[in-house]
Length: 320
Image (tube, rainbow, N blue to C red):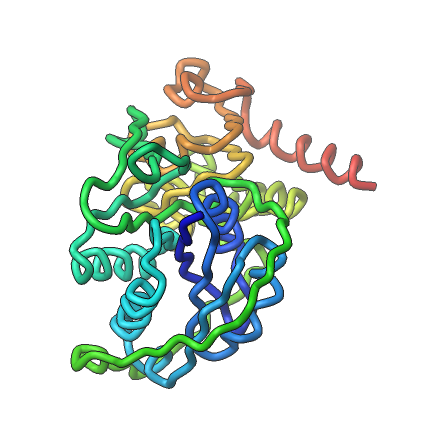
């Protein structure tokens, strides 16, 4: 069976959930070979092996932390040359998509971004995408070279599948461009104690109907009762009620959680484009004609300030 390269997104050896999802998808089309780079790369082996990696290629160098993107592209290019994989899978983060695009250009291959599913095909892997503001679903395959595919978080359930996970050192020679853009400083993101928006299994969002920054406490309370991330519509962000980093939509972040709860959000196409691939969608809106109700699995017509606190209390009661 052909090998499939999986780029590992990790923090000091702690593997992030989107990588484990990629391993699940990689097993559909071949044998996963993980590529872990930077500080703590060798510490990723146990988690990667538990989720199906037959081999873990590792390399650590200061360039991965000191310079942007290109050293990682150099390493993936070296991995492609060493393995001759059937495909290369990368998480669909902002950095991941830049890495994938540069890699595809270097190895003369096609690229598919923001896939939401992956399956084996007679002529190579077939990727499913949600396109044109989530109005259509397409199936595509790369016609030239080694397929490079980025996959959106929450596109597959994480499944344990113990494998060998043997660790091998990857030989990497950095290009002249690797040191072209130096990192001059870092600022740690302020922790809210909530999941990362794009990776969360549950997202609770507020829109224009929240009617003020101070009222987002109602949305946050529901999110915290569910262990969810908090999102916001563009209208709420533009009004200054919530940070832009939490915006869901075409000009914000794209999410695909198991459960998405939209509160006081009308459902404009710009917002729908960022959350329409969610597995289950619930909306609370006092306007029975709001476009969001055309999309949802469950809809509640009512004032969010009446409905959401009751929902929060019910969830807390059921949890004990």
